[in-house]
Length: 74
Image 1 (cartoon, helix red, strand yellow):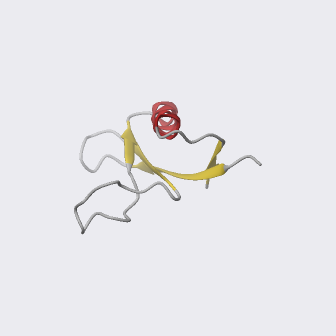
Image 2 (cartoon, rainbow, N blue to C red; image 1 turned 60 degrees about the vertical axis):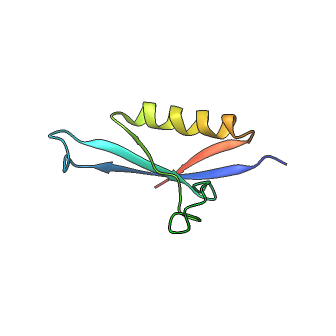
């Protein structure tokens, strides 16, 4: 059975910089830390383009040893 990872991608209108950027998170992929306040929080990915954001999300899943499909949820 193929595992499906749901990714939420958001376009953020230039609040920090003058141009928009993209943020994303994957359901079930949380920060691995010993800091109590951050445990259980989702990993947030940031990039200038949507394509680069999705590439970094896929790279993170592969580096974590996970296999399956990444589905972008609107």
